[in-house]
Image 1 (cartoon, rainbow, N blue to C red):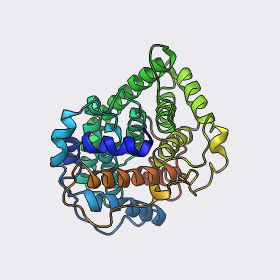
Image 2 (cartoon, rainbow, N blue to C red):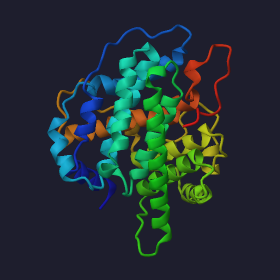
Image 3 (cartoon, rainbow, N blue to C red):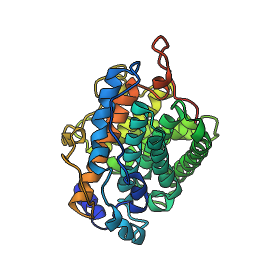
Image 4 (spheres, helix red, strand yellow):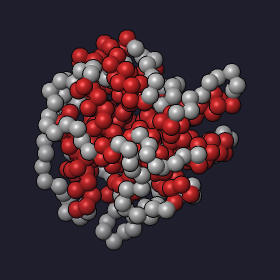
Length: 335
């Protein structure tokens, strides 16, 4: 089955993470003027661009899809749906950075915590690595936030949960590749998701005895890719993998190295350039299995892509907490 048909079939019956998304999308909150003035205007502009997703889906009703998701917890399409919650959470985190409202930080944490707590809905399948990489990226952002003392215990617990999930998923994927008894998918989308998983696992758990094998696995997969004419899903996962190398000061594979120091997009979906464009142009009241869910998945990918391709390369975690005269950090704060 081709990627498009597979995705449409998954969206048809492995529906949205309503139990998670109800937490993530239950309140949009007030929109105000960006501040404080020391914040970089480019940072604020990029955060506002990603905030379109939250403005459109922040008050949407996802209840209609809750039962269907729970009825199909092992569906292969669930990882893409879970990522909606991560994108909403990142937009709430962006609002916290812009306005300093602790309610936005709380909602971001609720979104990330809900995803981490429901591995049964997305883990242990071909593209679960993309969820892990996105969750790790999100947790790196949270760990780089300033003035979070009232939330530090939750942030620490979330960080430990994310590390545990990362190790479990990377180990399971690596074991599957090594076992002749298990068939490992070789589609570009699935391979890219595994590459992103391995990169983040090796970077975050560098002292783990399995880290070297994860690095080898990631390098082998990335080296085998052509960056021409890949799907949105493949481009997003490879972008998350590249970010995992850069944020932790790891050497980029040749495949990514050409534009590594540029603030322009490194990776693009030349056959399907829609990954940079929102499909939804106005607030959505109800998201249901079918077209509205497919649009939410797509627009959530736009946020994820902008984060990994542009925002976090230019503004790594923790950079918003520095004074103007300080240099941006080269690495995210430890998870």
